[in-house]
Structures are given as structure tokens and as C-alpha cells.
Image (cartoon, rainbow, N blue to C red; front, side, top):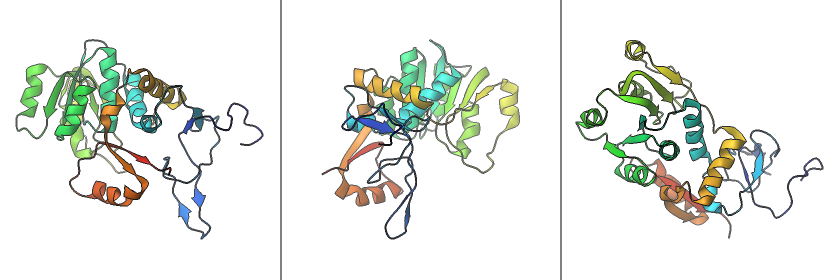
Amino acid sequence: MGQKVSNFKVGQRAFFRANSEMQLASGEKVSPVSGTHCSHVVVNPNTSHGADLLHEGAQMDLASLFVMPAVGLNGVDKSNPRMGQHVIVHGAGMIGLGVVAALAVRGCVVTAVDTNAKALAIAGQLGADHLINARDKNWQEQIKAIMPDGADVVFECTGLPQCINTAIELCRQEATFVWQGNYGAAAVPLQFLSAHNRRLRMVFPCDDGGPACRRAVIKAMSNGTLHWQHTVTHRITAAEAPEFYSRINSAKHDVIGAVIQWSE
């Protein structure tokens, strides 16, 4: 620790959000990708993307996954859906599941939509009221049976540009549409009249909401408010990592959330 750091002590448990680029002795640069796939971390702790002390009672494995539910909580906080409103979460990956959990606590009526049956089952465990498999030919009719006029709020969580207009069509008049996914630097397709005629309010959350959001989700994991253990479908050792990464990169895999035990 540097001389200017006084609020951390050796031996305390901590978590971090960013990491400085590292270079091996060979000169090869290593991307930290803001994660813990590194032998060491260099960070200024007292910044918006620094480090913080881990909440008392937090499980290390679950806490290591704090970013995804924090991103979801940030989107819910910024869009502010209200109790009793019908909300659709379009895409039940780890961030979408974070959205589902945050909405359930607020008392919203939550409908999760995905093509992955395992992800939908987890959404149900986290509080979704309705589970819609988009592989069903009549999945949109199923949603209309629940909310004939459309949803009050729609979170587009897939990050797939081809899903944007489909998700917009799930909105009612004067609904809120949340761009919860990251669609990259390229232009995305948007059917203007579909959004225009619905008079939509659009929200563009970014990142994980900062220190307050991170602390909130880790605290919720610790006290049992956020049952994030349901999202962990795989636990592996470091030795199993290469084969596991290859599995993730394959066209078909059953991974939702994973934790890796790096220490011996």
C-alpha cells in the first residue's frame, strides 16, 4: 500500500472494479479486463473504479460476481419502475437476472423473456412472475395474454442489435424503454415510428452504478436479500479453466454464471 492509503489494512478482504495494465517480464502486455484473471492488481482504491472493503459475512465466490447484479440494479434505479407495474426483462443473462432480482424487491410484476430454459428457471428463483421462452412460436401472444396493452417498462438486456425493435414492440403507450445491453460502437437498427408512436421514454444506463451500487448488491448477497447463488451453474478450479473457456466459446454451452478457484 502506498503512503497515502490509510483506510485499508493488510489482511482485510477487499474487492475491486478496475486494474492497471500489466506487462510480463517477456514484455508481453496482459489485459486485466477489469477482472480477477491476474496474479496481482494495481489500483488506486479511493476512486470511482477503485477498491472497497468487502461487506462482513459476504461469501468470496458470490461477491466476485458483483458487477453483473450491480449493472442491473443501476438500470433499475435510473429507470425507476414502480410497485405493481408490469415490467419485461428481455434477455435473462447475468445482467438481466440482476434486473429481475432488483425489480422483484421493488414489487413489480416481472416477466422474463429468453431462449434459454435454464436462465428462465433461475429468473423464476430470483422473483420473476412470468417466464416466457422466446423459442415458442407464440411467445408474443403469451405476453399479450398477461398485459394486453404492453409493458409499463421494458429492459432490453440481450445486447443484440437485432432484438432492439422486437423489444420496443413490447412497450405500451408512454412506456419506458431501457437500453440495458451494450450494443457496441456500430450503428444499431431502430424503427423510429414504432418508438415514436408509442411516445416512449428511453433510459441509457451505463456501467455498474459506482461504489454505492456495488456495496448494495454485495450487502444484499450477505444478508440473503439477493439469492445470487442461484446464478452460479459452474464452479471450477484453475486447472480446469482452459477447457472451460473453450466450452464457453463453443456454439452450445450451458453456462450461466461461473466462479473459478484460483488459489491453491
